[in-house]
Length: 137
Image 1 (cartoon, rainbow, N blue to C red):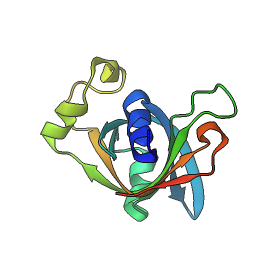
Image 2: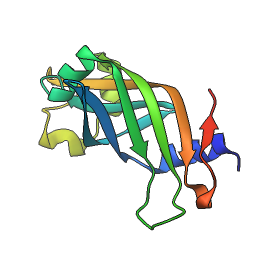
Image 3: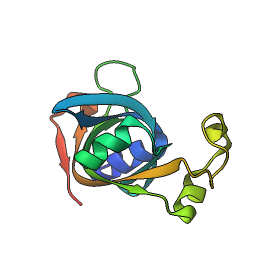
């Protein structure tokens, strides 16, 4: 399996990852739930959240996703992407699931926005101790 196929498998199998944004020139990381279409990632959030403010100031994010916690050799992805903030109702419906009811009244909740991460670069990391592999789009 080549690096691109492995990366896509990781994105299909992994939903939880970290997303770092920039706050006053310093990194700010948090865990997020991701959904994907190929290499484009989507994650729901509240439009009043700090991350939305941070992304409006600097639209770049760094994401780590795929590490299984088994130790050395676990493959994971590092993704640098440009983030856009979407209130598109069809996208909100597509990403919506009932676990989000703890934070939102439904897919039409006006506080719900979807962060769309368009990757600019990605690397497959730590695959069985191999060197990082660049993913090309």
